[in-house]
Length: 337
Image (tube, rainbow, N blue to C red; front, side, top):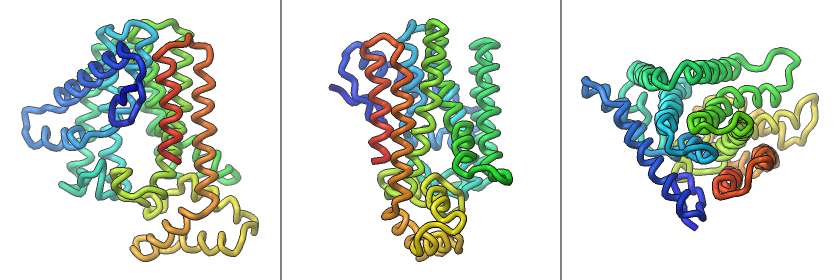
């Protein structure tokens, strides 16, 4: 058994291990090449998060999906680079919106430079992704455009909040389906499609990516509250401080809706509604949420989506690649454990 990549994928097949390791190395080289500019400052800013590392979860999924066709097909690695560049670009923009100080264990781009540099660097990465995408054909361009529209729509829905009468938890799941599930689904779809897999296989892997992406984001919600910065690579409670309602908080608020819930539930909601830019209040809110049943409920939701992703793989033939994808479902759940 070999652990491949920062995400900790357990691989038991030597041939698959070699393919994944070689593919990830090629993606890394592609990312560094795509983030080079004739302007040294742009290169420095664009490679800031690339060199900080990261799980490379999306490229990993693309490479595994490609195993159901020809994993050495010329479009496999470039498409994985496109998806990761798009993801990195959104991180630059997210950190500006969240006023985050840390990303992947290093100062965020907006903290190291300023918001303008961070936003423009994200735009630069989008441009470079589009340049690579153009060589992959019009169908790939269309798929990426649709995914990017969903991603932006998810972000707008998060900013706007649920409309009157809409269940906040249902609204939130729609948000993360767009913000996170869409791009992870495309990583799987591109990998299988570029490898020439059968259309039915491409569809199965796309749906798998969508469900796994939701589980992945829910695990991040749990980590934002339950972990420290050493584990997560970013400041814990960032969403909490900014008043962004992640799933554990939404479960808490559902308990007190229409006058329900305990006195402790109401007290915690009042604390969350207070000024959490105050470090003492923020620390208290984190500590109380970590001990609250709402966090356990969010963990159960994470497991449910991961199991749905696993169940969707049933029609695929047994083998090392399918086992690896199933193992990623376990890995996502473990992150939220």
